[in-house]
Every structure is written in structure tokens, then in C-alpha cells.
Image (cartoon, rainbow, N blue to C red):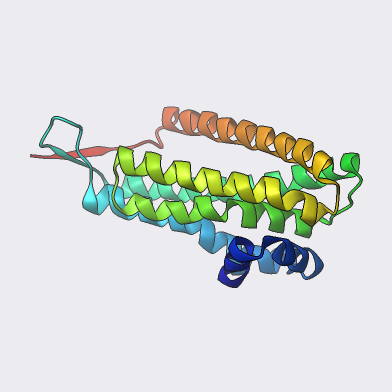
Length: 202
């Protein structure tokens, strides 16, 4: 995984071709890579919200979450990320034929996974909950993922760059819809009682 990621940073065209031509099986892809990458932001945020905590600007109070509520939220976040990668892969494959490409589902999920890798790595910032750190890390990670998407999709799908731009924009729009859907689902779960329980430390 890391070798592919570094390859995408330094010689992306060659690496995308390698990923397309030699994708792992869908089960191996999930068990060997995606479940661990998805666990990174969930686990780091769990540790950060239960051990480090955060404070509201202008206040000395440190706020933490209870272990039980943080664990439940981390678990559901992990499941949401796993589902999000699969859904994005399915949409990428579904739209591909419109642009004259016919990738397999495994290839599409692999593309979805590698494109989202900067977002997974940004989850390390969850160890220190801070709104400014989250904004900076999220902006950098989103920019890197967008660059991988727009620069890599034409090469990976073997289509002209003009079509690749439209294709990538469509994928980005679907990604935003998936994100909003996950947020709505989160609100529903909070209403069912699976929400944060705070601890304030003076």
C-alpha cells in the first residue's frame, strides 16, 4: 500500500497503470488494506477524544468523551468509511462505460481506495482534537485526493484527459453526496441514542 502511495506521489502515471494491471482481489484488497486504513482515523479519534480531550476557545475546561460512547462512534465511523469506499468504487465502475472504459469492480474500488489515502492519513490528527489542526489537515488531504482523482483518472481508465475531467468531476459530486448521506445517517443514529457522552474536567 505505502509503495503504491509513494509511487503515486513521484511517478503517478506509471503507478496508476501498475495498479490497474495488477489489482489484488476484492477480498484481499479489503482485508489487506482498506479495513486498516479505515481504522486509522477511527482509532486516532477515539484516543484523542477519550485521552487527550479538547477545550473550547476562551475556556480552561477540558472536554472528553466516555470510553463507551467514543468506542461506539469510532466503530460506526469505521463501518461508514468501509461502506463509502465500496459505494464510490461501484459508482466509478457504473459511470465508466459512459466514458468508454470498462474497469472491473476490484479495479474501481482500488482506485477509490488509493485516491482517498490522503484523507485516511489525515485521520492521524484525531490524536490531538483541534479545530484548526483539523481544518489545515483536512484542506491539505482533500487537495491531495482531488489531485490524485483528476490527474489519475484519465490514466487509470485509459481515456482522454478531456473526458477524464468530466468523469472526475462526476465522481467528486457523488463523493459529496455520499458524505452528506453519511452525515444524515450519523444524525439518525444520534437520535437513536448512539451519540457522544461528554466528560468535563476543570
